[in-house]
Length: 68
Image (cartoon, rainbow, N blue to C red; front, side, top):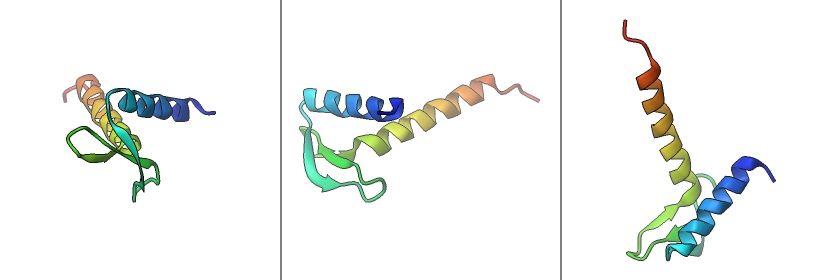
């Protein structure tokens, strides 16, 4: 199993430990199972994780990019 897959599975397991449940529905973007939090919000762990990583990477690039 690839490291990236292991990371996503760990995040999915953590979500269930927080009280979210894995649904029998799948994300229309990536095909990963959808989750539902205690408030009833449905979300994709995989897409959310990728989006959060993109935001962090952009922040890091902004901090590292020298000003002209």
